[in-house]
Image 1 (spheres, rainbow, N blue to C red):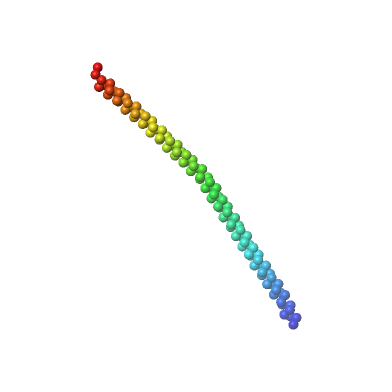
Image 2: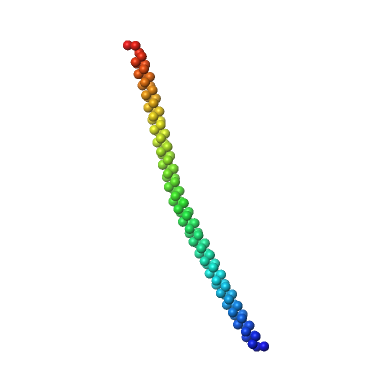
Length: 101
């Protein structure tokens, strides 16, 4: 009767140890998962930072394009003024040339 009693606690102990081992393994897995999550978060942060850096450059490019457009408009206006002046001087020239002396 005594022998099985002796064996039982040992078995229990072994089971407990196994459970502890399992728990430890689970904890390790959790830690690894957490680390992976942290790494992912860091990567996301890096990506966000890169995007932020890219955005100002795009804005600068847009501003430059706007400036170019303004310059083009100014040039067109100047040309129109020139044409008008040429037209007036031509009219004047014809008028003078057709005037009988």
